[in-house]
Image 1 (cartoon, rainbow, N blue to C red):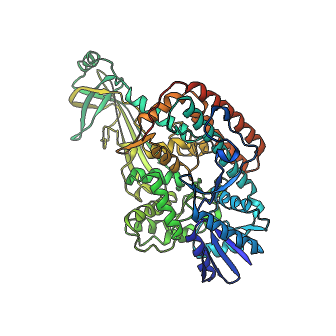
Image 2 (cartoon, rainbow, N blue to C red):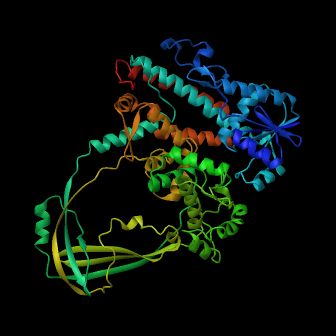
Image 3 (cartoon, rainbow, N blue to C red):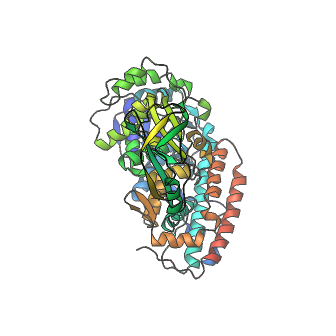
Length: 599
């Protein structure tokens, strides 16, 4: 008998349906010579400190560095989860009877960890193969079962997942106990490998914003006129005082001479396809969805066979998937909003900016599957349309703009600029305003010639002030986490930096939710701001290693390298060294510092 194990009951039942298995039992389904069972996500976890003999919280126990990690069944509020324990018993019975196991947990790092922890905890020795699919459609499931992979192909993926799990335990358990004990708090002050540098980023931006002192500055503006069209031109320099600006204003003449005109076409390539992180950013901007909401909605769409694997960190597809794109686009020609653009693309040469097999990680970018979507709720429909719309954008033509820059002389130098979209290309899909145009003084500019004198219809002084960097919202925080806090606007450069980001696309939503649960941060309208507790914790750890985003981000890069075969033992030793160092740092720096622990 072959046993197929899925990550969730819903997926297990769906695979059983595809096989035509219908005999239901408690915790599994049987039929067609197969047995289909499932986990409930993480059934197992690394054992708590007391299971290694570290009873009670004591400085003498720190740092806690177990020689060998133990697994224990999932606990809820310190008590064993009865449902998890029961399902483990069912899986053990099935594994004992199995001739072979087929792993159908989600095809990613955490999915591999879920299965391997069960397999090793049950001391199973049966051979296993891996189902590796990016879509839950019947066709994809059947194709995946025709091409099962040897389980050993994913040993390095498990190594990466296991190292992540161990490092989170070592840093989280030791840092939390060290800070809580040193500061003499009766409550728990939780710290974590990824959670703490994320908190540090939010706090640093909040304090920078709060303590920002705006500086006044002045500009001189003139309004020349050409063919009944008045436009604005701004002084070349900014002035620190109104008096300086008034002096320049006094020099403005009745006419302005056009000294140069530059009108250059500029191509704006389409955006890359979505990975989870970029989709979460878009959903936050468009709909105000939290990262966690978006992940939940996307997971539902995946399990409903409407989109491909959601927890991907890649924004590219290979040539094999690209070959299926024209047929996918054709499915959207009747779409209420995108039909016109989809129809246009059916006869166009598709843009291949998002096609690069070398940049595809475990899974390609998120795409619609082409399955018919029926009666989706408004939130699910919104996410589905963002996935479908981005597919149309990504394979569309460049947006062609004309960027005009006019230099004028009227007592001193003035400049007018404007951007006109000549061919919208990919921008026609959602037909939205160009972000680059929102700060421009002129919606359009008249055609002017070098050497022309234009009458100045008005002039004056503008009082402006410098602005602080805005507080983080979920979209901007997710973007910053991709590059460990480095502010990189260029899409492809940000992609290249991803390996050193904080967390992974699959875990970043959970990081934000953890900080909210710990009451270290809260949502204030769309922004994420620290609480008094969060600021207090940041005050203690801000200069410690555990708060350094780039250092922690580098670990994610190392974990990715382990997935491709790098040394596990070397990384484990580094983590132990790091754990010793931060434990010592926190025991020293936390002494006598009182922190308000949230109720």
